[in-house]
Amino acid sequence: MGARYLLAILGLFACVAGRCVHAAETADAAEASAKLFATEVCSACHGPAGRSEFSAIPNLAAQPWPYLLAKMKAFRNRAGRESEDHIDVLGLLLIDDATQTALAHYYADQLPAPPVAGDAALIAAGERIYARGDSGRGIAACAACHGAQASGFWIFPRLAGQHAEYVERQILGFQSRLRDSRVMHGILKNISAGEVKAVAAFVQSK
Image 1 (cartoon, rainbow, N blue to C red):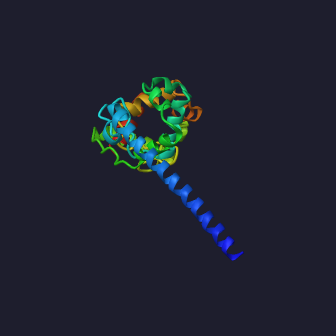
Image 2 (spheres, rainbow, N blue to C red):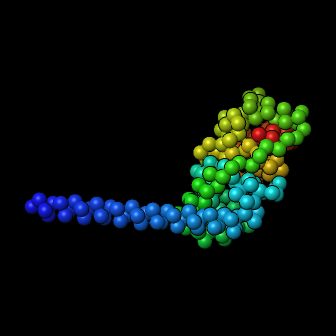
């Protein structure tokens, strides 16, 4: 009885260990695939390690992984009008869920893009809107969701170091409903073109 019990326990340990090894191997394979996809495909537009060299294309480096994963799922499902604007939807459709998750973690772990200095007065004006908003016009402080340092959190993207041109285009997209987000449209509908430019300059400088 004792020997049978011992053999059963050993068999259980072997089974669990085997599953753990398989899981580890699967995770390693997903990480390797994600890194290959990032360096061979995504980097053409988003730059080495997710730091874009094109002002109209966003930096992916240091973005919160839940945000990146949610966006990739939206692109894969062609959910939202913004997915039509992404030229590599097909590439995202070709990767499996594990690789997609690993890709989100890969970019989240990269060093962020460096801040870019600009016009001091414009940046100061942008900081005021970013940090405090304007309650009289229904403009919430950007910092409430994106963080005081614009580093992002969870599903809220990192804005620090992001290209001003890209940020400005996204804000205008929310205003005009080219990007479909009822919350963001409500927050941004009353912000002026000058304020949009100022906020974009501010976050790029962080």
